[in-house]
Length: 236
Image 1 (cartoon, rainbow, N blue to C red):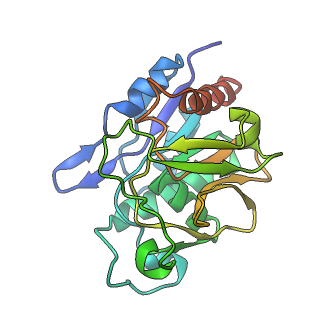
Image 2 (cartoon, rainbow, N blue to C red):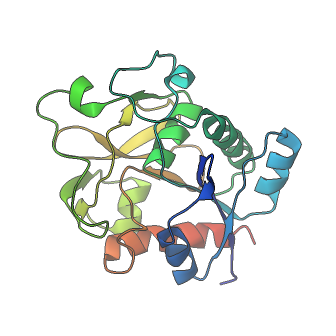
């Protein structure tokens, strides 16, 4: 195996670019080379960024601007990064066109779905119903707080080899309607979508939890990164 280059998106604010170290730990743990993708607006440069990497990791972060899925802001919507949304949607567009492997994590799974025409719950607690379990845990990042059911026959099931795992959880938004080219590959007991994957690409997967946060101790998290890096390795 070579050392595939993985481009990772970041939080973007007036303080600059920010990314928790867990992402680079997980990528380098599977012999990948993590590279920070700095936001640019020139589409030619964005295309060059995609050409220079072997896989794209869409990291977590703030809420997605609802106008990108045809809605006005809900009163429970949190902070947004609209410039980041536009940038990441272009990254996704070019990565999909080049059939580059994509792993979307938490917000990353949401922007992946939105870019392809899907929609979100702006706030699951007020929009999904009273049966919604706690998805924004107060426990540590590496604590597996709730169960997730994985559908047999999916790419995610092929990767993990189990129909039920436990995951960490740090979100109040979630995918509502999956894009036409995606299937739902995992849900929580309350029906919240926990994973989506492309039916048209070799490796395009979005998970609502944070496997980078549990990578060092959780086998399922390790399997996700191992499969992602293996797919990226085929690009080298």
